[in-house]
Structure formats: structure tokens, C-alpha cells
Image 1: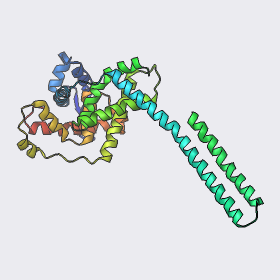
Image 2 (image 1 turned 135 degrees about the vertical axis):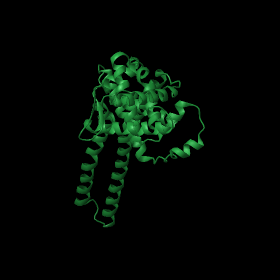
Image 3 (image 1 turned 135 degrees about the horizontal axis):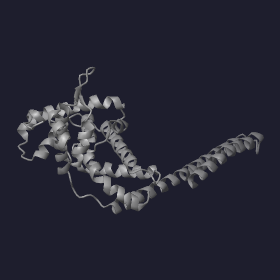
Image 4 (image 1 turned 30 degrees about the horizontal axis):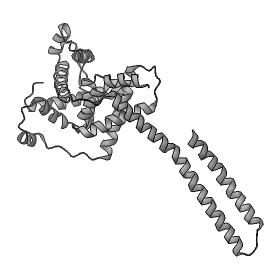
Length: 146
Length: 161
């Protein structure tokens, strides 16, 4: 029949295998194709294995949850995930704000302990801190709105 | 994807996808259902175009499922099953489907995936290659080896192949 053996890798092959598989799936294996499948080593093995696997598949059939139920649950989960994603930048904004305040307070206390009053390094330090913290918080705020 | 098109697609694919998951996960129904839900969740999250071809969408769905199965196998070491002789003595089942399923479960995970995708789901070699992350040319020999293994195991248990 149409069967050939692969010479290079010695794996038997048949060009009509996909056709046989499709016909088996539709339950329409008949005529010429059936004769071929019975005579061909590859296709007869494919037929037997497909039948065994379809038997296994049919034994697995159990009632499924309704599509409406799944849709509702998946959408609820997506909403939760969106809320979580929106909250994350806000959480980080809070952390950065707290860290900035803490750093500024430490810096101010250090300057006070040196008894220099409001000095040039204090002002520059606080401005530098604000210059880093403010854009970061703006980016996070925009991210939470997206 | 709106509710109506999701409903139609789910009705069309869920039953078969669940069978594939159960076959790949050695019939762990609870895990198969979890992965089934996660698969549809990722499909929805991917926000595919509404006018997309159902065949393409089905391929995408199976690709997600196959990736999730692979991730699960990597993170959970699956216990090896008893060998054929042990099983022949421990199981005295007349249920042919269950018996074949037990034989099928003894194949390597990749062999199970290949056989199921090729002969139950009837995906083409190039579609399977995309799902299992292999080259199209390598599918035919891998499938032939998987088929030969499964056929040999079935024959040893007295099933005609």
C-alpha cells in the first residue's frame, strides 16, 4: 500500500496517516481508506491506538461547570487582580513617603546635633531627597491610574 | 472576548481540554480542573482580538494548557508508577477503559501529551510542535516512538494493536 519506511531513521511512516486520523475522528473511516488502514502497518497501529485513546476519553466524561459560572468567576478574579495591581503602586508610594520623611528627620536631627542651625547642606540634602522622591511618586501615581 | 463568544468557545472546547488535562495529569481531577480554570483565565487575560479564528484560538488555548502542565511537572516531582507486572497483580479490573488508562499513565509525560494531541485532539504536527516547544520535524519520530511504546505495552497486556 502507500506505506513507506523512512530509510534514514528507520521509522516507519505513511503519507496517509493524517487522513486516517481525521477520518477516525469523524467516525468516517470507510472504503479505500479503510482498506489502506487495514493493510498499512503504520495506519493500523494508528487506528488501534486512536480507538483505545478515544475509549479512555469517553470514560472521562463528567458534567462540566456552566460557561456562565466560569465567566462570572474568571471576571471576578480579573477584577480582583486589577484592584491588586492598582494598589501596588500606592503601597510603594506610602513606603517611599515614609522613608523620605524618616531620612529628612534623621538628616535634620544630625544637623541640629552639630548646632549649626539651618545650614546649606541641610537645605541641599532635603532638596535632593525631594528631587528623587517626588518624580518616583508621580510615576507610581500615574501607574496606579493606568 | 464578550460573554456570549466566551460561552460558545467554552462549550466547544472545555470538555476536550479537560480530558487532555486529565490524561496529562494522570487523572488528577481536582488538579485538572484548577489548570482548566487557569487556562481560560490566561486566555481571557491575553485579550485576543474578537474576530479571531476559532481554530487559532483553540491552538492558543492548548498551548497555554500545555505550558501549565509543563510548569506543574517541573515544580512537582511526580511519583513513578508501579511497573506493569506489579500493576497486573494489584489491579483486577474488567473495566477496559480504566485498564488502558493505567497503561497510558505509564508512558513518559511527553509521550502522553504527543499521543493525545495527535490522535484525540487531531492537531497537526506543526501545531503540536508549537505546543510542546519542539521543531515540527522532530514530532514525527517522537510520535512514532511514543506510538510504538504504547502499542508494545498494550500488546503485553493482551490488547490487540
